[in-house]
Amino acid sequence: MKKYSTKDFERDFPNDDACLEWLFNSRYPQGVTCPKCGKVTKHYRIHGRPCYSCEVCGSHVYPMAGTIFEDTKFDHLKLWFKAVAYMSVTRCGISSRQLSRDIGVTVKTGYRMWKQIRSVLHEDATLAGTVEVDETYIGGKAANMHASKRAKLSGRGTVGKIPVFGIVERGGKVIAKTVPNTDGLILIPEIEKHVEAGTTVYTDEMGAYKYLKEHGYNHEIVTHSAGVYVNGDAHTNSIEGFWSQLKRSINGTYHHVTPEHLQEYVDEYSFRYSHRNDEEPMFKTMLSQVVKHSS
Ligand SMILES: [Zn+2]
Image (cartoon, protein in one colour):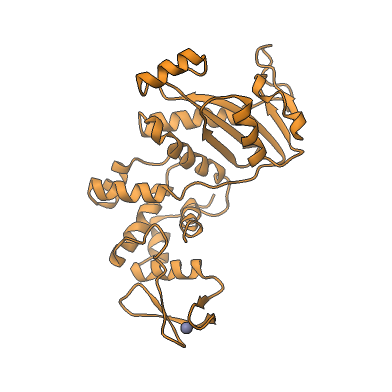
């Protein structure tokens, strides 16, 4: 992945106008179809305002509208881009407090920006080739007595821990989700949703996966209990590596994650992992997500 330095940032985004221009060009690569004129028309920037105007009829287009920058003052736009840049530099992400310090805003403002930026860091990929599927449990302390009692009674999961299900394409992207339990009824539909039929799927010997063949997959079982961990291609090293990185990241950056926020953390980490081998710098990938998630 190419590095993107502070110097690169200042060259590409010297001011709020440059950020708006980037947003305009990225959201309308084929030009703006003017709603009044009913066709693509030339638009020019209205000086001092965050909008562009149709050359023919004068209708206005606001590139920040419908994005996470919608409720932001125009003269804060570069600050937001800077926040994205800071969030893109580390592999594990940063806390909202760290972000506040980095860009010099209050904890409250930093938290809002951090939360908004994070909300676009997820994607629904389709995986193929060779994939590995696995489950893990995340979270230490019991979140609430009720949930842990229920877990104990049902015999599902570890008390106070949340089951997380993951699918990784070897050398490619990952999909990871918190799940209510690890029954086949929950996991198989997730696999069907995210993995192309006919794909070779490596799993451990857990019963939930036993019907994968019937669902059109080439199912290979890795027998951990027999003490055989790596036997040629028959392993789940990629997903296990992902789990340990994810857990390290959560412990290192956030120390503790509440169950209701776990999926957001998992999404952000998965997104970073999925784009770890991209040519494009992570900053540009994250900025593109803002455009992808605009309405
Ligand atoms: Zn027009």
